Image (cartoon, rainbow, N blue to C red; front, top):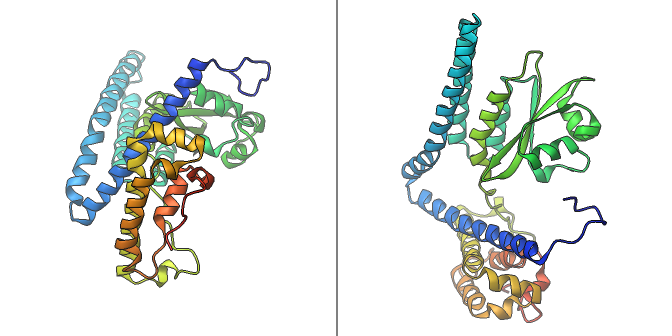
Amino acid sequence: MDPFNDNLKPADPLANAVADAQTLAREQVQAAWQLHLDRVREALEAGWRDSLERIFTERYADVEAKLRESFEAAVADRTREQVDAGLGPAVAGARRETAETLNNLARRLRSAESRDEVRRSLVDAAGEYSARSVFYEPGELDLQAAPALANALESRDTVVAAATPAELSDRVFEQLGAAPESLVYLVPLVAHDKSLGVLCCLPSGEPVNVSALELLGTLAAPHLELPPEPVIIEPPPPKPGWSDLSRPEQEMHLRAQRFARTRVAELVLNHISRVRDARLSQNLYSTFQTEIDAARQEFRREFFEPCSSMVDYLHLELVRTLAREDADALGADYPGPVA
């Protein structure tokens, strides 16, 4: 369906209801993940790094094992075909190289501490099979100007396209540095039937190992599925700058941020339908006055009173997450930041 075609009929009420339910479910998942992240940080600070590393390693162990099993089976089939054609030694060498690349990427993904590091690891591994590779997430692209990338993301299948600005957009074409009349391989990264991004690869002069690129993408996709880590909000003027704070003050600010994120995430996770209705009615504060006032009082007592440089992170989180950056949705009776 083309959302930009005015001649199409609007979606039926059932489709709208399903889309709304999916949006609310995603928001609840993000809230649950936020709570999980803060608990992980607390555990790290308490000295449980080794235990947590074991948990994350075990989480992806099954995925890696299944990918390796599929890879070995696919390569074995291909090797038998090539042995029959008299190309056994060359294929065996290529098999070892691909297995090594896959294992190296798995190790880098396990130790990655950010989405940027996951992306770099994927692009580096893809460089073994291409002259140049870049990776984009959907929000980074103007999909109307890049129809080939839009096709890969929508179909969730690898697309081979002409490397031209008309197919890739001026931005992607320039970053790839494609030669005239060359091709580009567009490999979507998919997890739970959702396209998380697309890996763009230029061939290096040899036949492109599409299966290897798809395996790399499949291995990296679960690591990109996690939401980005929350951004630490630095104190704005006229409060002291972050670097001006003492270490105990910085720790107090970080605890205050976690407190704010946790309280708001609990509201979203446990009362998503009421949150949605209150946003539409622009009366979030009156709907959740008991919970918000209790959180404000605790925030004032635990953070504002003992720390003169404190910022009202609770107010910022209420606006950012609960009201979705629409301060008016809190309602006219919302008292504003803690003074």
